[in-house]
Amino acid sequence: MRNICVVGTGYVGLTTGVCFADLGNTVRCVEINAEKLDMLRNGKSPIYEPGLEELQERNMRAGRLIFTDDYAEGLADAELIFITVGTPMGDDGAADLSYVEAAARSIGQNLKHEAIIIDKSTVPVGTGDMVFGIIGEHAQPGMNFAVVSNPEFLREGSALSDFFNPDRIVLGSTDQKAAEKVAELHAPLGAPIIITDLRTAEMIKYASNAFLATRISFINEIAQICERLGADVREVARGMGADKRIGPHFLDAGVGYGGSCFPKDVLALHHMAASAGCHPQLLQAVMDINQSARDRFVEKVRILLGELNGTCVGVLGLSFKPNTDDIREAPSIDIIRALQAQGVRIKAYDPVSMENAGELMPEVTFCATAYDVAKEADALLLITEWNEFKQLNWEKIQSFMRRPIVIDGRNLYDPDEMTARGFTYWGVGRGVQHTHASEPSDPVSV
Ligand code: UDX
Picture 1 (cartoon, helix red, strand yellow):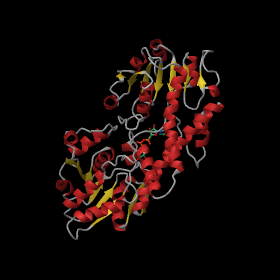
Picture 2: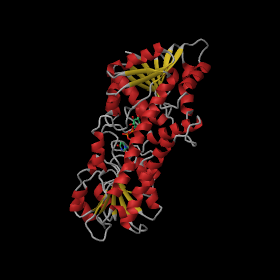
Picture 3: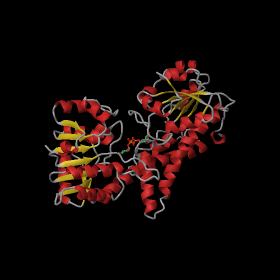
Picture 4: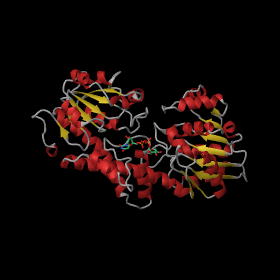
């Protein structure tokens, strides 16, 4: 059993604190936002993550998980201190480290005993050295401490499963003993542990996310080519993925990646590279292709609807992926705004993220069900592949719509089935299926 302090209770911090408590450790989480702290202390999770609130409540009841806004209380007897505060995108694309700096300063000021500080936030290469310097500057003279980089690889919507079943634990430090102590903390997870230096561990995180984003932009570029040449990108991905060197994951073509990580991390890595005098052409292309996946989707709406001004379009799914309420950098935002700019009225439904979306898109008509979205719609756009959209009652949908047009941003539906039902259906990388002679007959021509 270890005494742990977690500073910052966002997606990463709260998951980290709750899960280490569930492994039997005593965890004190420091949260300075009063509203969030109040929710946490009442056993409520400020974030939507399947299973997290139940685990949080159980460990609070067991006395292993405590929330405070007081650093002295949080750090009291903590031998391991996680920094899990946000590193949002700065104006110039560099990661904004102000929250990390503030956390390091407060830790230094309140550190009363030897401890290991663990950077779990995604931080630019070299941040561990900066954290070490800040703590040293504010801690009592002679205070013994070490800094370890321990990047997280949690996906929103599956954070608990990813925490308890990691592919690997990455640790970086100049202090081998400190790294080994953090390795012991992770031992119950039974995953391979890679111990390296601080900068390399920080780079592993960025390189991993940038590579996953690259796979997505790669398959989206292949999808565009498939559309022109009449191939099916889903089958292409299946054929590629059977190669052990490629693997089947992260080859789903669609409207591109969003979220609080890929967009921010690819841009931050690009910024780091450019600042170091490199020319990150591939990273630039990954970002450009991701943006064009959204633009291309809007273009499909224009092609199939013809005149957009005055039309009504239904949107299914707003969050950047299923099983989360997070709409940060979600493709739905760019797509909806581009259509509204051309005079389209938008109706939308999402199982959990409409409250967040409402703050960003007040002029959208939010509906209670997918069927309400379909009413009077000239086209229906599938943007987030929530489970509840997989088996809709298409007869009912078609009876509500003005025009039977479905544009599928995640290849959720079967083109043959949709056309057999009388829809004009357009997926991603699968050509245009249609049932009316007047529509575009040749994918190449559209
Ligand atoms: C990602 C990384 O996967 C995780 O390891 C890291 O710690 C944080 O960033 P997350 O952003 O939560 O996790 O979700 P992820 O499942 O990776 O999806 C990211 C985006 O890529 C979503 O918008 C998703 O729709 C999109 N995506 C994913 C695709 O478009 N195609 C794919 O094949 C996979």
